[in-house]
Image 1 (tube, rainbow, N blue to C red):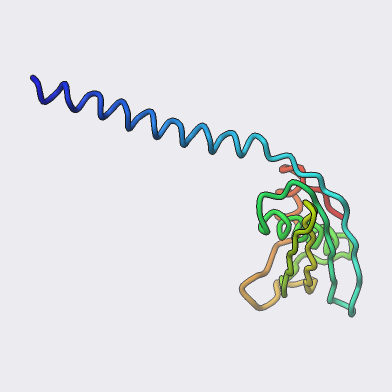
Image 2: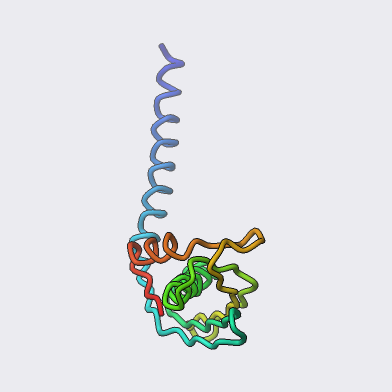
Amino acid sequence: MRRAALISPIALVFAGAVSGCENAAADRVSRFAPDYQGVETRLLDNELVSFRVAMRGARNSEDVSRYAECAAAQYALIRGYGFARHLRTNVAEAGGIWSGDAVYTISPALPRGLKTIDAEVVAADCAENGIPMV
C-alpha cells in the first residue's frame, strides 16, 4: 500500500508537467498572427520566376518559405500552368521583418525533381490557411 502512495504523487507531477508543455505549445500556435506584407514577382525567363516576400510575425524561416510557395502556386495558375518546381529560397530577418527571395520554375506538366508542387492543391491549402497569394 505504501508503494502505491509514492507512485501516485509522481504520476501527478509528471501529468502536470506534460500538461504544461501542451499548454505552452498551444499558446505559441494560438498567438501566431503573421502580418503578410506583400509579394513582388519578377519573371526572369519564360518559365523562371522570382518571388520576393516580406512578413512580420513569422515563427521561423519555414513560414516565409511557405508564403513564397503560396505565391508561386497562384502565379503558376494565373499563367495557365499546373505545376511549379522550387529551385531555392533565401530567408533573412532584420528588425522584426522577415524577407524571402525564392525562385521557381513553372510548367504545364509535372516537372522532374523532388521539390515539385501541384499548384491547385497548394493554392487551395494556402487559401484555407489564410496565406495570401499573388
